[in-house]
Structures are given as structure tokens and as C-alpha cells.
Length: 58
Image: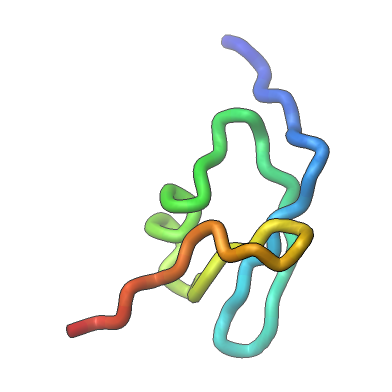
């Protein structure tokens, strides 16, 4: 099995009560993280650019 390398960046996971940082691997995609973690409202990069945002429930 190939070991995933961590990327030299941080993603900010925005949630209802605040945020938490993660260091993504080379295999991570913001949309996948968001869909797998229903408590996450949006994901930003270290500069504050929105990489993914949860769509409002219709």
C-alpha cells in the first residue's frame, strides 16, 4: 500500500460552532471531505478562499 503524503497547507473546516484545521493528503479533495462529514458547512484554504461549500437543503 502506498502511503499518502501530506500537503504543505492547511484546510479550515467551518462548522456551526466554529472551525478546526486539518492537513490534507495528496489524495484529499474538499468535496469528498465535505460530503463525508455532514457537520462541515464549508472548507477554506489557509488564505481564506472557499474550496467547498455545502449546498442549502431545498
